[in-house]
Length: 366
Image 1 (cartoon, rainbow, N blue to C red):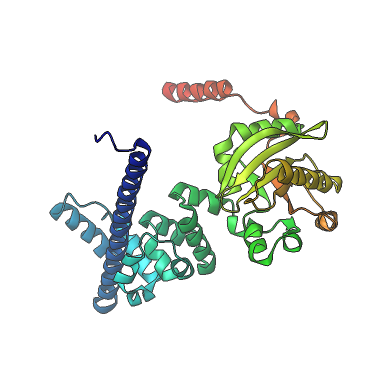
Image 2: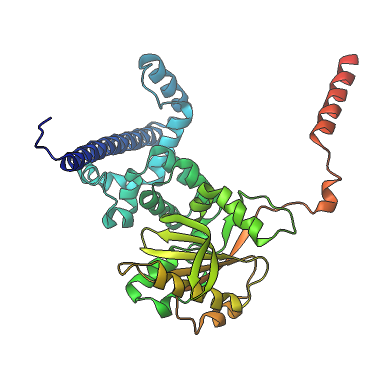
């Protein structure tokens, strides 16, 4: 290497090359995905036409699958089940033949606003597995388009998509009580509102009643990956029981995050039981302190999020009226557990296994 070459300049150059390689690989995968989806669409279209024009029944799908496997053994994806999905896919989106393939390919790696707002383009943007999940599980096309948009924006895997559908994200997003519209500029308040939800579903936790707030906090941190998934895209964990010194006094924030998209800190306070108006004042103070101590001049105002098990919506709204910081109030739900008095009545694993062995022995004797 040339001794005059600056090491820092070279490392920056190497990073740029690596990024370009990765982007090219992603674009190549995306184009292949689009071409495969279009192929499946055309096959579904051809089968539909033959069934309509020649009266072919459903048996043609099995025969087609068997013949493709026999004559093109290296080609995957043509099982009877998947070909059935191709036919269903075509019948769901019969208008897709109007889409110019080149237009889709040109936008294959760009989650532009035009793609996000156009359902036909979104269909081509998604992996085949995601499309099949959406068709099979969501009949309402407006709700389906919502999940399509979230997949493109957040890069969800198929498993995460199924979790979000199970937890009915489309109903919960943006539904929390907040003062965002009163505190934040119009061009950002809507985005902030949609970045939070109500309720939050912590179904990855199983906690016995009674539990303490600190137990909930520790369990959420222990399951941080799942917690971040439920919080949504953009959250970065900063700390638990984050210490702030104001004057000569120390204060501790339950959970502190930084939101990469909103460019601000997010203070989360966990409360057991029903919401109380004094919680808003506490979080208002924490947000002010974070703005003054941690945030820099380029950060947006710190947002507070109060998570409680239950709330009276009117009480929550009144509690935020005179607050100076942007604050949202949402509920959280845990996995339901049986009361302790019922637990002793349940058979143990050993008891079940012993009973099964007895049943097998009785059958053997007959």
